Amino acid sequence: MGYAARFYPQEWDNGELYAAEPYSGIDWPLTDDEAAVAIGDWTDTGDLSFLRKHPGAPAAVKEWPGPFCIRIIAPDGLEVPYLV
Image: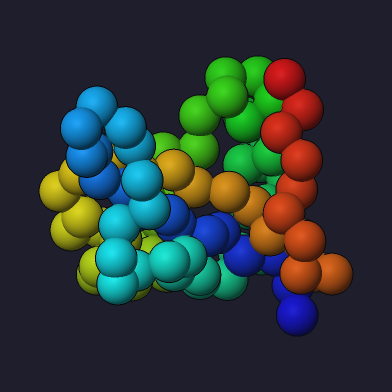
């Protein structure tokens, strides 16, 4: 397994942000180079939302109307820690 982007759709409920059901993490593969760029950008800006437009992102990711976050998953299956 290589790197992946993981999309977490979210929704507001009584002023709190929660994971949206039934979706709980939608993954798609990234090349090592794409992951390196994303991790570098994340370190600089704290924002991975540009990955939502990645050519490999599933339609559910591209079409999600609400809030969301995206994380990078390393080849070992663990989330890459936020480095900012």
